[in-house]
Image (cartoon, rainbow, N blue to C red):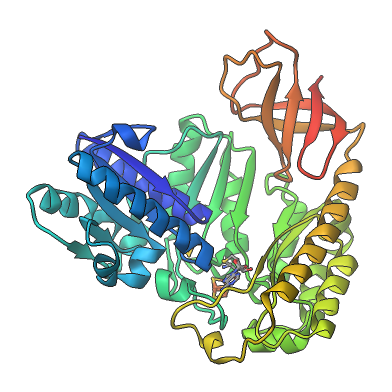
Length: 434
Ligand code: SAH
Ligand code: SF4
Ligand code: F3S
């Protein structure tokens, strides 16, 4: 049996895909790169915004036609599976099984039942040990960075957000398990790990998140530690301290702010004011200057006035974020913000988004230009051989680096090399290995 997994969404979903792939591989299934070759296709879905959901339904439509042509099993996993549960079968009757986000280890059973000819197999139960997934099973993508789940679920209740519904309440992995997994990864040759959670800094698996970072950093041979993602209200002085002093923790902080207007933040139930957000950034002290800060914005939240939006632009300028993800507000089923009046025309929302993104591009360009002429450590992310004359890498700040070598020269996959930055654009840096 050959399987293919198509994943949408965040790093957590991506990593869940690696866990699902491991479960099937252990059972003797073979992973293939193209859906055309597969006897089993998993759609590992995201439902953070309507557009993400549309992509899933459109792929499901394509697979319906394919199922008429040849034998094929189709399973839906991930956040849309958890959100819609059995209702998915009504919308797309050709789905063979549905697996929720908190029942990952039930996958082999569901596949076996579907193979045996049972229709509409489903498990969207909340297994209390889902977050204790055995690392030995996980089948990682071919990447220089390894992801590690430290916490699943979210205890916040932002009024626009589907994640508390799709991922449940917080569950934390004991820090001993996290350390054991990280050590194992380093033994297998990884030099970089990324700690994952819907909100890593509320971590409570026997120590604080700041402590956990320090402990992971003690592992010999490990070079860089990243984490994603963080809620501002759980960003402590202790964590800021580790971030600026521990040389293995990369100088990069993604701290989603969503809006620069207190009135909107309140309607979003973000639990902070702009001033409190800025106070949190202040914990970084003077070290902030050498850190890369990035954020998320939602534009056109119900009730957002011109004034509110201008406040968001002003905040973008005040902080000078080096990067941001920004989207127009998308109403999600069952979320409290559905009850708010949302009468702003889409054209206005789109225009606001475009203004925000234009300004962001300028800031990113300026931030990247400050790297020009500098020698920086870059992790090589292309696995050779490569005869294009350039290789892909990442800096500690997670900037995309085009390493220009000229044809014929090999670079060591996964290793850090020094490179001199010669080109700066908003989307990448060009650099020459030294
Ligand atoms: N746990 C993270 C966010 C995960 S969702 C945090 O709180 O920081 C990633 C981003 O998607 C959010 O930061 C938000 O900007 C965006 N997002 C979430 N729900 C959305 C919605 N209904 N409409 C538009 N953007 C949304
Ligand atoms: Fe969603 Fe808010 Fe939780 Fe982030 S903190 S996952 S935005 S509810
Ligand atoms: Fe999407 Fe679920 Fe992640 S909704 S962003 S896949 S937690």
